[in-house]
Length: 279
Image 1 (cartoon, rainbow, N blue to C red):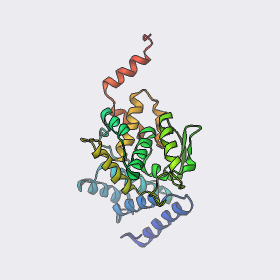
Image 2: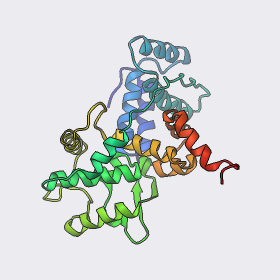
Image 3: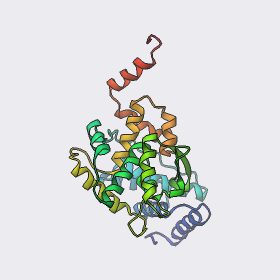
Image 4: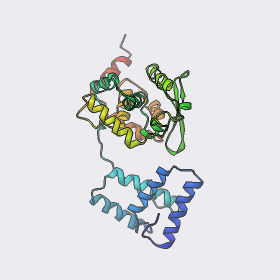
């Protein structure tokens, strides 16, 4: 990995990445993220003013504030590691309503009848996502040993190699029990020969599943399933801090974005149930 910068900066960047890799044990995905951040700011790391100008250039090129903020987390961490007091404040991000599946969509997914091994596997993964809100990388990283049917929990390996326990419903336990009864490999979701399932192939199967279930008007992705779980959790009166733990967010601010998806009818429903005047 090389960058078009001065030799001292290049060496410093390489050392920063090496320490993150070998001392902090960050994931390969995080290393790639660092690379994207340094690539976006190559030639603009030697002064705070140059970095600020680069932020403006990125925005003028149409790079979203969310993406720029992702780069800034990397750059700010690098400067802090160097012992500098430089820091660029995060940009204000566009307030977007996250796309979710409608109740009809969810009904269609839950009651869809798969045919064959691939369809059954895709349906099982979708049910786990709907019930737990796991990221696709977390779903595909599950092993059979991570499933505790007796205590209704999954041991999830999240971002930054952080583990957490996520509860599952009795209904999902039935789905997982049937899956495990026919599955003999260490990874929970694999090909027939036991090769770990890739994100690309799992996404392909899920899109096919949504098409056959007649789901239109929304992006058929694992992210949409995660968003749908989170919004439904809050819509039913779930605790925001509990949701943060379930989703594996390091910051409550990330979880709070799901509040924007709630309408006044959702708030009224919860208010009626919690009001001191309700009998």
